[in-house]
Length: 88
Image (cartoon, rainbow, N blue to C red; front, side, top):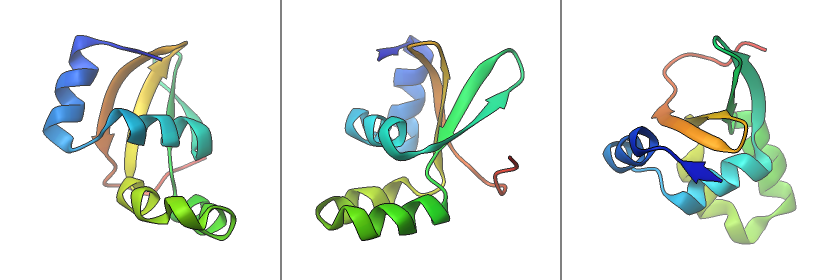
């Protein structure tokens, strides 16, 4: 995973860690966004599924609900906190 300077700055501003981004990549749902990039996030439904499967990571995952990263290939473009429901 490659982080752009913009992504690093946004992660710092929004309290998203590299480990958090890796967990979003591993467990999150994806959707396409304008420009051909893919946004990944952990929805409440994802969290509940993961919670059943991975009790030891529960605290970290709980912090990631509603946080989203946007990628283009292997490059993370940005990260933010979702304010609207995910439309698939």
